[in-house]
Length: 393
Image (cartoon, rainbow, N blue to C red; front, side, top):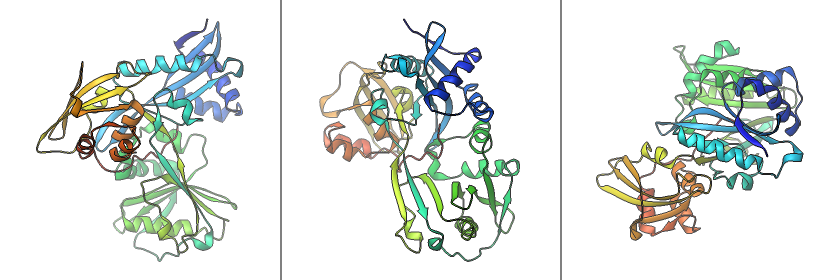
């Protein structure tokens, strides 16, 4: 019988070997350093057959900013099993244990990057993020006039404080994006990566934008591009375009806000793809809604929310949600008031409250069941804007 437990640093070698085997990655020193960097800061769960590690997953603690509210979020990664142990329930047992621990710790949310959307949907996760990819021929990159201020290339040590400051001020990443800690910035941009950095400063010398990139003769890849002003955005676009004689194409991937950038390109006939990105789930329904940034309303609003959550028994049942002037009170009750009752799975509640799907769409497709007037009333209290995530784990 397999044993499920949290792992310690003594298990790191077995963890690394399993990850390398499962993901067909080389066991290089660089990979080991990046692996250790994350595992040292994560809760690591393992399933063992005797002393042999057979399945594992990591839950890395992050903070997300959701419309001004900071939530505890667990990023799930390194979900893996040796082939001879797959299909024997190891990952399911680890997921159950991990979710129960997170709920006990009052962690509100969890995100993960799926190898299979149906596989993780069974554990209560659902798609809540999208990305849009652009591949642009150099001839179609906009020819931009010089703007006031300057762009200068720099190294990571000089760029990191600027990147942190600007990123934290970008409104769209405050819709479910990470509040990046120093260790995560180091991992994302520096540890084992060969990224380059350029900063835009206005005429007063204040940094208002940055681009992180890689470049070679085949492709100029934009890793991250953010700006606080239109001048900063245009100056960096001009800087990127100045590489048009040194590369065969420009490639840019970012969180999809609902708007694409094709209308800013001379020829909108560019290669552009909208792709599903990471999944998420509400881990603790009460914790999440207690702090939720509902819109202010002059009247008291009461809803009865029926939650189905196979892997979160603490969420199952009927919740009375009272919203007064943007502040929520939520408690579990034995029964609902029929005309005020709304029912959904934890997956659909996650999509609704994270802003990925509208109440109207979920209701139309019967993912959210109840009276239309109640759906509209609840939807009117939710903040606008698709969730955005510019990180990967």
